Length: 326
Image (cartoon, rainbow, N blue to C red; front, side, top):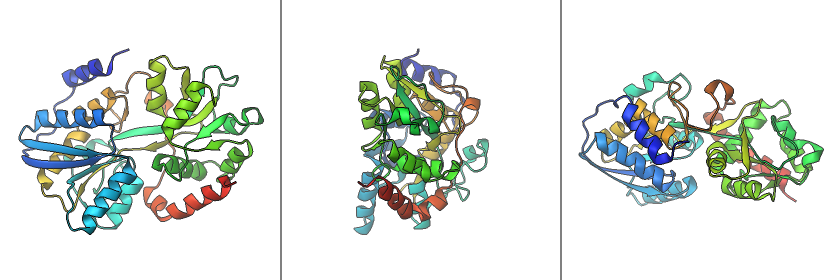
């Protein structure tokens, strides 16, 4: 298996050149990407746009948004671009009139429904949530319903949607697509599934054997398996949810031209090759997947409506809280 550094080298050697865009000046990116991924993304962009000086602020999406809102309230927003975890957050910012539309020429290569139809935000990758299990588990799950069987009682963990945006999107996706709706989460509660922490906590519990099954984002399990951890990852038959790490330009951007060039790069074949080299599923359907993933036709992503999810966010959090409160 290629190392991440080797994979990056291969990606750049064979990638199609990105869409040309004359850009210069300073650009400030606020992102929830891991620091290493953010720096690689910026370095790759600067290789094509050497006259742009890019700095970034990295934190979890809720903290990034809190910082941005504090700056907006003070009349001094600093960010030109947002590259964060989920399109529900982006849809909320769009509704508030805080984003700038961009008709990116690179977006034409993507299927309808993937990006915002009004071109205020663009999905850059697919980070799916499926089932992780310890290799010592007696049952090898293939379905979400396997995690509510009596034999898994006390052996399942999931990140809580009360503090994880990806977990909330997953809950909405499952309850919208499984016929039993929220009764599925009631069944999880009935088998004493632990709803606590974030994806990293689930990974530690499953890899360490404290729990044998868990809801987990794909890349965490696949990366740890490659390192030798006793973890397997399943894309369940009913489908997976996905957060899409969308990118958007702030309406208050001081350098919208450079920000547009950054989006064009992320959506270009070269930008999507970078996403794959970093270990993620590229949003561009024609882009190859990284090692450890099945073919795209084996990955079924459940339908999800971010605009509807924004409207129902408080109600969905309350529904989950009511089910899992002691």
